[in-house]
Image 1 (spheres, protein in one colour):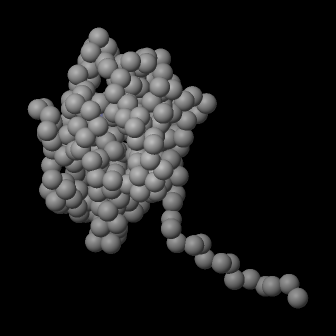
Image 2 (spheres, rainbow, N blue to C red):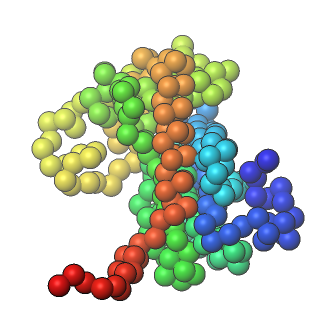
Length: 267
Ligand SMILES: [Zn+2]
């Protein structure tokens, strides 16, 4: 059974959706990803991952549905690069709030953002609360990487700094759409000088505002030269399997503590 919600009629959608339904909105990006990867990298990865996770969750009995992905999002850290197509935070927030308002008109109460672009995370976390408060939706964000299942989470030559166009992303696109990758143009660009800072940096106690050419002219932050389709397939399949399990948990998630049973107490 196809899991694309928009391939149903309005009437069929209302019949298909229940309070334990999970509706998944992929959020990608159209942005510069170095000379070796397509502009659509984050959109491609978000849509393919979300579609595979929804299909797997549905096969396991979850009432999961996929929405068409949001391609244009908050890519202003790559605003300087031709081909990047980005929305301001105000426009994207308003767009997401109005999508949420529309979903709240259906019987579904659970909306999941399946995000493929790090620059969207902070905004989507704020949006999750907006939609919870304004429309009563239960909102969730699947973003970034799921825990690694045996395999490495990033390239050995990246020192944890492979966040854009590096080993992982390049490997996944090599797996999904190898014809879109030109490995002859892949160049390592790892801002190793950031390792000298104790407090300020990626994943450190103090975060900082940045645009991608702050680090190097290539706009790449990572090492794509080590990427392989084999690593990409393993990474993709691990993420999808864990995301499908997460969708099953989301379908039964309730933040309210269960009512204590009133009964006879001993003594
Ligand atoms: Zn990316």
